[in-house]
View (cartoon, rainbow, N blue to C red):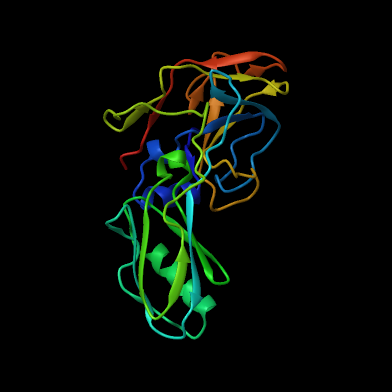
Length: 258
């Protein structure tokens, strides 16, 4: 029975303000000989038969643009505001000094992650340093985005702008806009050269370049079934042969309405 399955990572990205088209941009499509896993947070089943990319070209995965805020001194006060782009707030209220710089940095990262921002920037912390990350699918588009911090008593050293983001190349994308909840693949062919011989039974879109393909509740994935008819992905033949070149010229993805 056909059943598209979203990973918790994909569901969380959609709940955070990005749609399927954004969250699954610059993805790869992996084809497996095993049946579709019960959930998309499980490892795939069977043998990897091949990976579809744009026109079969080598994939360059996107890299997140980042900026850091290091808490460097002070035994009181607060981080009052954190903004990006000159005006987009990343915290809803001041974060007070909390005993140590490390604990205050942890509180700041928590406050950033708890506050909805239009760019879906997230925070992680290591000791006294908070790293801000733009979504991986924005890539180099976030480079140069300004970072502003105001504070009382506490001293910080921060990056003036986000940097080090890299755009994806040869990943798979969807056209805009969706029509009646249906997304269509881009006009350029999706193509793979098979790396194993077998019968295709399931697929997985993987949109995060760091995906280890193991058990995970954080990676962005979409799973589905493969057959010659009545499946999530219908192929003219499910027989895959090592070295064979396979092409998907058309595909639509329907976002469920209920």
